[in-house]
Image (cartoon, rainbow, N blue to C red; front, side, top):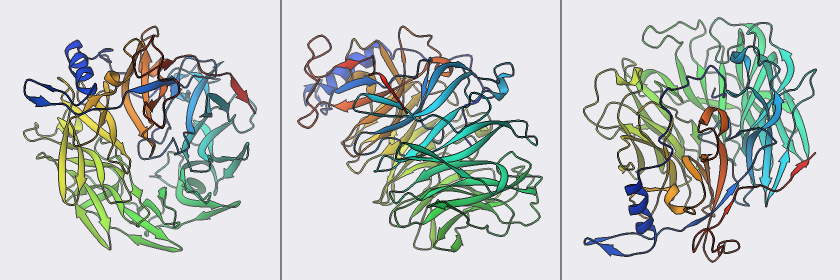
Length: 508
């Protein structure tokens, strides 16, 4: 679970808030056109109109709590995210219980054509937080919300999954326990996630003290998808055919594996009542978020599944692609470990993987040198990095082959520079494709849609400079024949304009 809580480790060294001037100058020259300098042909990139999507009066805006691996901007340009209100979190006296690291109340919001809409939160006895998970083509949003109550078992605020549609937030409920989370949804409105029940469990997937079960919600019905033999399961992805990918414990006794400290769990594909064990690459765990890799477990519309699995001995993890009944090890970039983050309907995979000659055991300290990769038709391509940043990670790819992600100046720490990779590379910093006078540094490329519109997390130069307390979310709209309006502002650049002040919030 990737909740933004104060228990997150606040690194002492944050960002270099501006990429080195030499990188900016060089890449701005490269993006200007198909020119040749020093005998090297540079590829042309679009410049972008930059829009600050704003907040609800508080300091920060957030990508989906479930990202990466989830679409939070659809092809109509509707964005689902979370934004701070001016209200202090009721649990601010104990920051470990705050929903966000800045201890402001935040709500799930949507943005479209300049209008920021507060989706609110589920009713409760006190001010409650909510967050988006993913958005579908119809603009429906899956997410989760507090209800103002405290779970007596875990001591944390209770959270329920919701579906927002037709200007209403629908509580998806639970299986008799005190918590549920929605991960994503398809265009029919089927929502998947996981919920607790009331059966005690010493090692639950969700930290509740009771069993966690994968669910499929549709038209008011919350369906338990079952397990692979163990007591717990969770659903992470659903395609347009209603096939669901998730993870499940396989041992009914939940025997703890010494090497991992958790019971054996495998990825599954659930298809209209039948749950198939996808197996592993030889280890005892397969799914997502293994060994400090922020990976994903996704199913595409062809029924292919990506994830990350441990190899025999549980000391190394690799990305996998499961297709037609077989799990394929996608390998690495020469080092030990790798992870899958995004899967296209064409079977292309992006993520990050170790380079050769990393020190032994570096995955436990997150200090391995890793690069973003693109895996296509059996070939893994190293997408490189930016400047002197040693690490990079690819997050999402559209059908046009445009890839977004981030580079990292200190491997294992927070992201440093957002990037775009297209047309065979090389990687280019998004900061070089927005107006030079924007006063914004983009540190993470989060999402991209089929129109080439990009969502990125960033910091304003007039803000606090701390991504845990004042980050913002930005929409980058390519300046081209289809997106020309607003790109002619002479005070920004010849091809781009920045909008810092969002339109007034629409309250529901």
